[in-house]
Image 1: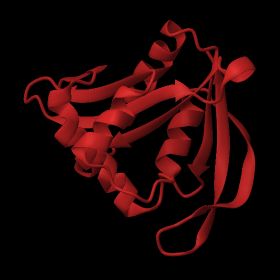
Image 2: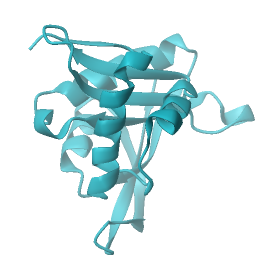
Image 3: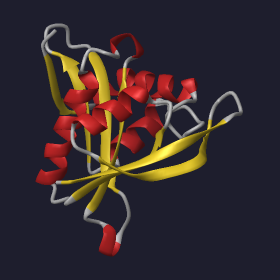
Length: 163
């Protein structure tokens, strides 16, 4: 599989919303509860500082995506935030790593100085392992900060990395 990461185009929207909605539906990683449709998906993805997709160069299939934006405003707008989603059947193939690495470069290119993740669910072991492998610093834990789809609460972990 020859995977490239690039900026999204409107032709990617159907695949992107399907991948995003799968994560939302799972209810174990994203805080959103409402699924996207093409219209509000376009608004979400176009409203970011950058939205990237992982594409299988051989087939043109979209395998994952990320959104990058400021974590806050004004005097804290140099801190970025991002969310990542990989097609369920493609998890474990290092697509998430390619997306995160591209995101770090894009964040630097856009002038961000730090990237911070506010709510990594403690049971998302793959993401936590990846972030630690890539040198993110664990800031702390918020006990029971995430409501799982099944009604239970899980801790969330905060991470940052200086760009």
